[in-house]
Image 1 (cartoon, rainbow, N blue to C red):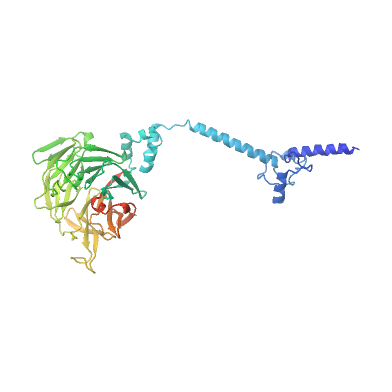
Image 2 (image 1 turned 90 degrees about the vertical axis):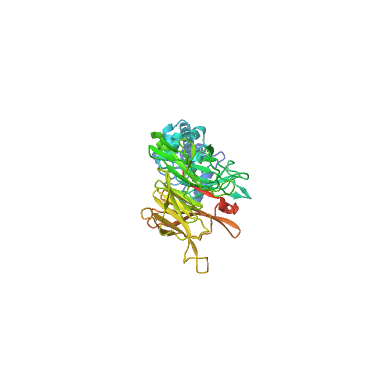
Length: 489
């Protein structure tokens, strides 16, 4: 028989052996061998210390050995293994994360693949990527990159609103509306500060700002605005100073084009490279330096960077209020409801007799719009019921008319849902879309509406895409000064 002292030592040894497979004993723990941590878990759970979740085979050989001190016979994983497992996972994850970060620092994409990724980004994201590093900025500003982006048809339409007025001064801000995300952006520039009543025209991915006034004079100068680069540069000035000239853009596709001026005929033969990039800008009418209406016309040739004065509009045509290039012909419309066409290839004017002439309210200037280069539209304000002044039973509405280029007849296509509050509403065509911006003052506040119409849709209708977003801080004179351009970026 063993003495009581030997039995105590044996019990103490068994307790140590049991704790090697059970809980970790803290200094000062009770001789019963139950960890204080396990005891708290045990009293909460009912049925043992179930801190482990899954059954493991690592401790299967312990089935015939000493029983775990904390837990029941069904406990599959003890406190010690749980603590070690957590420690191992935590350190292993840190190690893997460190190695992954280390490896990521040595991963590089070839420039051509990086270009393919960047050129598919929306413009807003593309502008943000230029702030990442000098290399990305360099890649996204090369002519090759911009040409690849344009050829890949990734750009989306943007509306650029010019000529706003704040606190009595011409604003230096250009407002850009992203049609895809329906969000306005603001671009600040000092170049246009103090310049107003200019006209704008879109050529590829740039905007030409032509003529206008300042506090002292009427301008002949022409500026080119590149939205992607947020940069301006000058090209050749017009022969005549003009404010609010009427513009048209014609892309040259033939190998040979004749520009007939009033003094001589100029014929230019183009190379294949010039044919793809050459374009003409036609400037007609406007107001001169002494506030006189102009009937002179001139053409800017991008291949020579020169303006050439061409034949004047027909006699007694009236004041030109709108113009557009459609199907290779430059159409102009006057405030006296006369339509004329300039044949760009042959260099002469012809009067166009249409029947009937769309009835309209003469206080509102009509706007010619070309869609797809083949369809000619006009947006005009007409009486909804009868003719005459606005009365209780008469209502003015804005209507969309299309000209049949074969029969030369105007056909009403659509009616605009909004009341014609803006006397100088702007409408611009782009492919199969017509964009409209109306800005007016009501209840002491300047408001604006942006609408879009898809003329290729059989159920065409006007859709509101933005309203009351940017005009609240503008002066009411912005309604008259504003101009708009559509650019694919």
